Image 1 (tube, protein in one colour):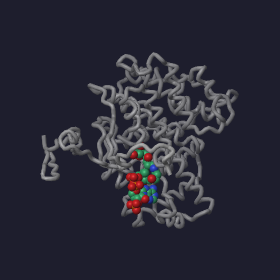
Image 2 (cartoon, helix red, strand yellow; image 1 turned 180 degrees about the horizontal axis):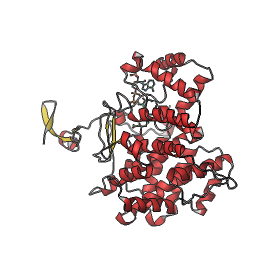
Image 3 (spheres, protein in one colour; image 1 turned 135 degrees about the vertical axis):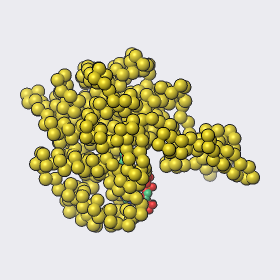
Image 4 (cartoon, helix red, strand yellow; image 1 turned 90 degrees about the vertical axis):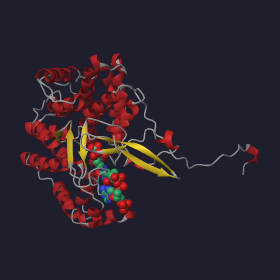
Length: 428
Ligand code: SDX
């Protein structure tokens, strides 16, 4: 094993270097504090590996993204979301028996428990869908107490299928409640994406027939969001799972982390930004100038990434998918033209080039969601549906480990040094 040497204050220590299957190197500091009395500090964890994982590989410089070794471009083109979900969770492409079994479990668990349906009435109609989703995923655990925290080999697959199927049903039910329409029951003859479209847009006296092109675009969208190594929400799921909390509680925490505008909330913010430009409030060029002015506090939403320093491969696939679905649905969305123009301007502007800022997964995804009729406030919910397999897979990886090790980072304290209590009558 190779080592890295640390020298400080006349002492030196050899620290083991870990090499991954893609030749990534990491200095193993698990014994650092015991050996040196020191810890490392890395605000935002930009340089810190929290775990070794076999699920997703990203090469940020080369724009590479693979789920369990399979390039995202091939999965987006040839796979389905359900098959990709199984791959991400179990580490291999399912054979026919595995695929059929998982599909049957998804169908079995597509319906929301009747008592749980009443929970929706408890929310105000204008409640943020991500708040409802996080709450209802936690509530889901209450309706299947037999699996709360007891996921083992025998029932893990059923729990995973329940969560993956219900996240879609809960999302659609949230939308129906929001617009005052009755919640639709799933159809056993529909596949995952088609059933979602049915539960979103059918009404009791008017069932839709999902457009195959829309279902394909939705499958691609979901595949491209299925996992992304240790992003903020996935790391949150692992943090919660490491305490021994159950899968539903861990993934509900992931929903909360994803909600933020710097993370999954960016897909909504991109459309709001494009709309603002379209309304003429600001020309693309003027908007870009404001973004570059630090005092504006404005960011080019959908741009930049902690890991991708060249391009986000998902953005390229989503841009093509947006072209295809808009053409097939004969939609001329001015926001796509504005998005393209912003990208063109940014890729020639030293501010963005110097900071290695390129379109990320959120820059074009909203255009597709708009085209297939998903309302803006459901965009981040769509991201959560797509990311569910990755959260479940990371939860499983934590629980499959030989021993459950709670995540507990350290800190450097910068507060007041020791001082004595001051009685109230002596305070200023
Ligand atoms: C996702 O981690 C993942 O994998 C996430 C994700 C996934 O699949 O899970 O890929 C999904 O969250 C994609 C990101 C969606 N968020 C956005 O599109 C919001 C806009 N982007 C930024 O907020 C930002 O780029 C982040 C949050 C994505 C990344 O932030 P970093 O890595 O912490 O970078 P930084 O904030 O330190 O920025 C470095 C510099 C700064 O300028 P200086 O102080 O050096 O002068 O770049 C600037 C930033 O101001 N900058 C931007 C910018 N992003 C960074 N300037 C303008 N517009 C932007 N979008």
